[in-house]
Length: 248
Ligand code: PGA
Image (cartoon, rainbow, N blue to C red):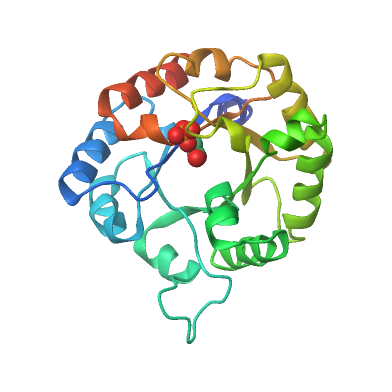
């Protein structure tokens, strides 16, 4: 009976993932990590700092309920890949999660669905949970192709190694990232229902998540949590976002 209760609680808890992107100093990372780790929603929180700050944040999160994640990795475990970082290295640094397929990686680094699939396989090989990002562009959306495009990204990027305990999906419409715009609740529900039906995985929402809109976004059926960019860099705003997750 007790085990059933704990399992249900875990399923219902909404996750909040902070994607700091290429921002922060050791001082700001420490301050943000200390605040998140001491929040009552720490057990639902994953912080993804840039690579040089992983060690700093890992030290602070050690022994707390909050978890560490990275923003990217290479698809090979080791080798002559100057400037790259492997999932095994991230695992050793304390990462339990790695983001793959973020639209900024797709756009600025030409990452393809096939490469993303290889990265997710590498993340799984290292014993880490993948946070697989996908989402439609504005032209896709305006052409009424949202579900078709995200379904295609899912099919092409999700490896055979994926299961509900090692993979989360983050639905992030490209046009919503950093723009202050979000889809309607009905549009988010439709996208999440589609992706969950195809994958059986938890679907998080990302794109202009803020202190003001988190509670409403987390209340949308099918939303298992949020991937937060800009607002995760402000300790006060992020604390309000964690309050919303704790209060669901
Ligand atoms: P944003 O970024 O919250 O600043 O829109 C989200 C993301 O890119 O993951």
